Amino acid sequence: MVQVAVLGYGTVGSGVVEVLETNWESIAKKAGEEIKIKYVLDLRDFPGQPVEKVLVHDYEVIVNDPEVQIVVEVMGGVEPAFTFTKRALEAGKCVCTSNKELVARHGLELLELAKEKQVNYMFEASCGGGIPIIRPLSSSLTADEIDEISGILNGTTNYILTEMAEKYADFNKVLKEAQDKGYAERNPEADVEGHDACRKIAILSSLAYGSHVNYEKIYTEGITKITVEDMKYAAAMGKSVKLLATSKREGDKFSAMVCPVLVGRDNPLYSVSGVFNAIFVHGNMLGDAMFYGSGAGKLPTASAVVGDVVDCAKHLHENIMLGWSGKELELMDRKDTTHRFFVRVKGSVSENLEQAEALFGPVSLVEAEVAGEFGFVTELMSEGDFEEKAEKLPSMISRIRVRA
Ligand code: HSE
Image (cartoon, rainbow, N blue to C red; front, side, top):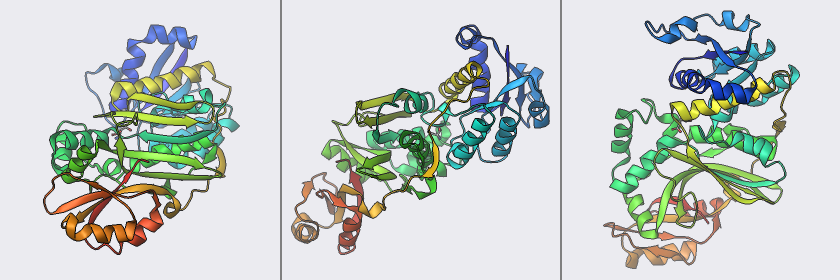
């Protein structure tokens, strides 16, 4: 029997307990032994609930118990999760987590510690919730040179953008409704400002390219400035606005970015709606692959965590190499990356198009019947070039990148 301790009895922690209890028999067959929860750590009490029998408030009980071989860290946040994880690994225990913030910030150090101690640090649930993506990148697709990962990696923002597009509803109104329904956090900043997606693309890119991607160096733009008018133009173009987290290999250079993008109908990410996540991967041998599914939520996320627990149970004292090296991947200057840009401009086509074309060259007009303004799409150009030109167009309202 393998004994497990779960740190945190919140949404994911209670999901992990539920998955292990519901599927214990099939999980035992797959793991080769029964997996049992010995402890659940939480500051709170849960009077009258079954978890009471295994509930502890002191981490020392867990870390000092040699019978605990796997620790599930689903507390979220950096501290005390980081300290608890380090101590568990130092004590020779495997750790499985859904904590993307911790993995993006300290994953490399924790993986090195796990290797030194011949145990494992696993984080399948940190990106894409229940969608298998960490294992495909680190073991199934190792024959390939991955040259692109583009993902809808945040369910909250995808839900908001979908509602805005379908109902032509304002961002703040949809956010409020999403919070009331429990889809969005009370403090939605990490989601709507793109920080959550940024951490996830940093983790995926580190695994795909084998060198550490520092999430703090990834240019990140959220969805707070997207408006109903943008959605009307998107519909007129047959495109949808998605918060894309993208990293690309361009020759011997790499770029990474998180921002709203207009995605066309021929792109598989176009129709990913609501809280769903999807990750598009391109490999030089594989070609295109797409991973799609439930990117968040109690049971999908817990399913990914427990999948890692099973893998740890099968490799208790054998470190599985993940190929995330300490060499930091140098990212291209954002200004050198190229895109087509959708631009909204105040005024009429007859009065303003000439100036726009004088600056940007030939553009494609977009008719969406939004009063007092018009829109156009530029040719492919660098971000730096676009910004220089945009500064000379004072009537510009906004711009969104268009997927080439
Ligand atoms: N807040 C995240 C999301 C949860 O909305 O996708 C899953 O990481």
